[in-house]
Length: 301
Image (cartoon, rainbow, N blue to C red; front, side):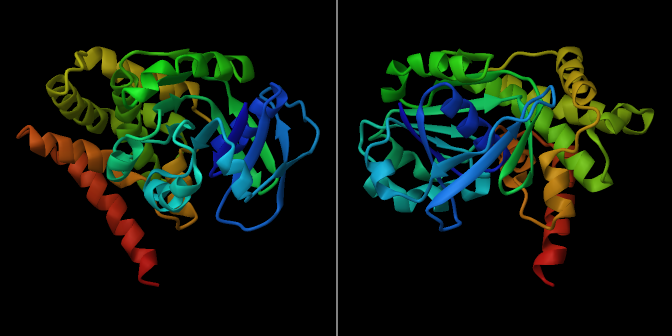
């Protein structure tokens, strides 16, 4: 397949390299204007794979793409993709892989012309430099359709499975997206505010806060048709914190490097949906406001 990765950050670079290794023709598109972009991959076992040069910023690649994988930050989705749509054939599959939910909402009217997919992954990746990506943890990628045209694209799960297991197709992508959102609503803001690793959230210090956050999440998710108990959701969140104990969350990294976070699409999204159902979420709202306050501090510098 001809595949373009829009936003080759850590996760985008991991997929670019993996899909290339699986035999696909891969090119990159980013905010940096340069004719080629090189990547070296270090896998989870510490093995370093050869340096590969990818074509970049080529409109011809967009014109002939079979699949465009969008891996920019959630707040960048609209501004990144809107200028490109006129160069993309309506048969091209669009796949969005971001933290949080709601990133494609503004684009939804335009996306009806394309087979469109949403995906979420628990693979870990870190990009210490522009040309080096480290696969920091094995995970699972879940893919599903955003619109009716996307429902005929189940084969994409096999493409991704061949490139980087485990990947699977689900008929209702909202279920895994809400599950991932719940994890992010707890781990991301808490690690960002307290500037700690994920595993530190397992200490008794955070028990009360996590329980209150989970209580709010269960209420909202039930109104969205996602049935889950407090005990099960809490355990899922703590299991992720345990499995990624030595990692820093993406939001923690955004805060420490004074970059915009995805809080609007994580706790912000949760609060917005809760309001639509008349549910109060004071704990999630407080975390949202604390992160926005931190962002505001450096935006005024």
